[in-house]
Length: 240
Image (tube, rainbow, N blue to C red):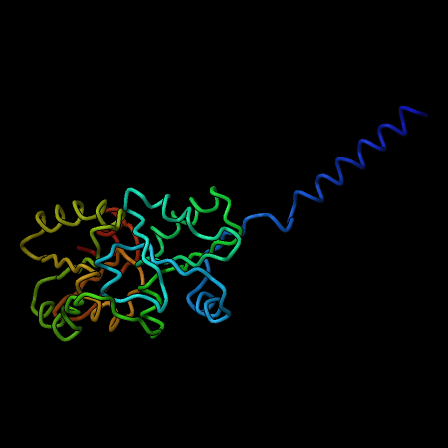
């Protein structure tokens, strides 16, 4: 009988511990949220808004009241450690990659609530939401759709690669595209468009994530693809 009572008591303790450890008030919340949800949380106030891009990117346009803490700087962790761990932290970068990694670091450091804007500034711009300029002169927005149309006109196939220097998938795919363009140079031209340098074009075309590919023939868009793609698959889908 005493043994039975002990087993029941032990089971009760395990159950209590389980209840306390799941969904407790001190657990970390780390979420990727949409642009609209991000905007709504900002409007509610009492948050710490952090732009984890480089100072140069920040100066070209940032969310109102955002503090710039460069994810790639040597003292990034030291800087975020100065933030209030009990207040929600809102993070963003250009497309969500760096801020997603930063959110993971902050979760490990014990921050209570961390929210990463899915798609970053690119999707924020696509949604037509406002930005503020920094303290230095912003770069020109680069080419427009009209400019691109002139470049893709002609009898050749034209493959347009939308990329960025910080984008790891872009860097992985670029040698494949360059090799393909060389092999098929008699009928294919490759145009490389840096998303950072051509923001107006990205906005006009509604491109919110990279790498992004477009294939033109006689000036007409005949194929597009978002994300990484192997050469064999690209050739199969495009018929090049």
